[in-house]
Image 1: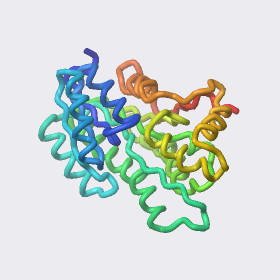
Image 2: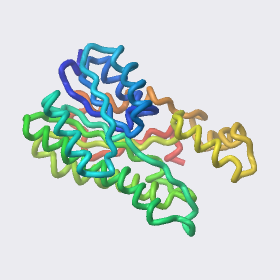
Image 3: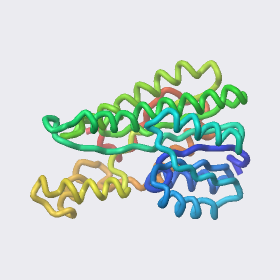
Length: 260
């Protein structure tokens, strides 16, 4: 299998798109390091992933907002699995609050997880790749919200826009080592986070959850949400040998809604 013997790290791996990516790697023989802050859910998700392939599955409860946690986790990964071939930065937190009510804590939390933590984990993974001479792949999750701002999204949307620029800068710095850096910008993907958003924000528009979802889907040319498994296919391609010449790019995964 294509990823047999290769170690891949996925953050936000306990559910949603990160979980789908972890499963895709396992099905193709990878050793999968699953990082998430939700230790209980992570343990259950890791059991599912472990049953899909013959590689090692290593669940790790890690809060990437602290660099000390990242350093400790990466040391453990190297000790147990050696070289890292791919890192997928899927962890994030969506805090939407009207601008006039936004707090410093909300701002710091959004940036610490969505941008700062993403960078320092990428740095640690890249150092591992350089050390072992691996022409690895770093795939990060931006968002449609980083391209089309939304009410209340001052920090989340700004951080996700930052992921696209960070990806370009990392790609330029790491090209000399043969390491590629790309990003994916999903729109509405059928995850727990999106379902919670629909249930929460529908009241602001005087709609039921079903009515609000239908309204949002009107803005998507394909007329439906994406599925986590579809995102996983794109991430898998970008981190495979077939995607080796793609770097510095942020690829929309929005069903065409970023084009209208």
